[in-house]
Image 1 (cartoon, rainbow, N blue to C red):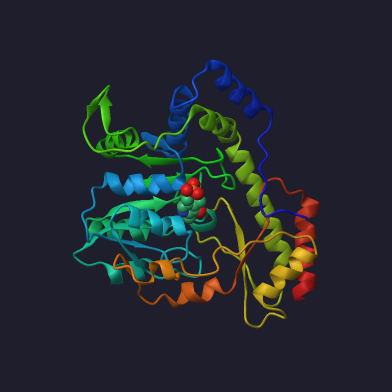
Image 2: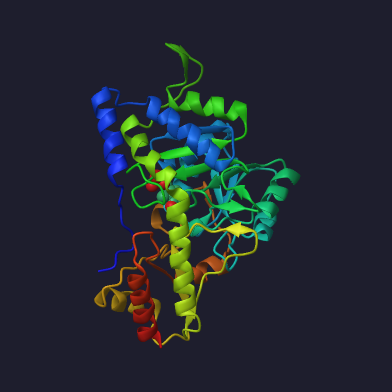
Length: 364
Ligand SMILES: *Cc1c(COP(=O)(O)O)cnc(C)c1O
C-alpha cells in the first residue's frame, strides 16, 4: 500500500529527544523558545508563540482579539472542523463565504457578508495553497477587521513572496500528519507586539510573573519534548517541501488529460507547499469519486477525502445560533468531487508513477 501520509523523523530527532529526557526539563523550556525563534524567522514575523495544538492556536488567536458576544468571524465552509470549533470556543459567531475553484476563500463572497458585527476574516490555506491574501488584506483594511489565518496545512507557503501567517495572526498545526509535526502541537505567529504579549499570557494562566495574574488564562503550553521533534524538521523543511513540489509536478504531468479528472492549479504569485495533492472527479468520469476511492484502495494506492461535507453540515451545529449558513454552491459541489492522492516526501519516483498509472487505468 502507498500510504496517503507517513511520519519519518530520523536520527537527529532521536538525539534531541534524548537530550531533553536527560536534561530533566520536560515542560516548556529552551527547546520551545528555540522553536519559536526559528518559526518566527521562517514566517517572517518578530513573534511566534507555541501552543499545545493547532486548534488551540486558532482559539488563542481569537481570544487575543478580545471578541465580544455576537461578533462575527467569516471563514471557509470547506475546511477541517477545528476552524469552526475554534470560532465557537472563542464565543464568536461563524459565517461562511464561498470558495473559488482553487479551494480557498473567495474575496467577493467575504465582502458580501461583511456587516457591522464582523470582526475577523479567517482564510484557510487549504492543502498548503495560500488564499488570496492580497484581496483579503484589502477587505480587512477597508473595514478595520482582523485577519486570522488558518495556516495549519501551510508551513512555509507564501503569497507574493510573503510567508503565510505574516498577514495577520497565523495559526499553524504540528499534528502527526502535517508538513511539520510534533505529534500534537501548534504555533501562532504575529507582527503585533501587544497581541504576542497577550498570547503568552493566555497560554500560561494569565501570569505575567510568578503569581501575578493579569487575565483569566489557560494552560496552552507545549512541552520541550514536542519542540525537540520539530527542530530538525525545520532544518529540512526547504528540502522536504521541494520533494513535495517535485512529486506534485510529476503527478500533474502524468495525470494531464485524464478524462473526468480536474487537476489542482497554483495561481500566480502563490507558493504551494502541497500538504495534499487534491484532484476532482467530475460527473463525466467513467466511475464516480467514491468508486474511484474504493478501486484505488484495492490497487494499493492510499487516498483521502478532505472534506466529504461542508464543515457546518452536521446535526451538532444545525440549531446553533452561533452558526449562520449562507449558500456556498462552489464549496458544496467540491465536497462531492475532491480526492487527495499521496504527495508526501517519502514517496519514490516509482511510487508516484504507480499512482499515475493506476489512476489513468481506472479512469482512462
Ligand atoms: C489540522 C488542522 C487544524 C487543527 O490542528 P490540530 O493540531 O489538529 O488541532 C485546523 N485547521 C486545519 C485546516 C487543519 O488541517
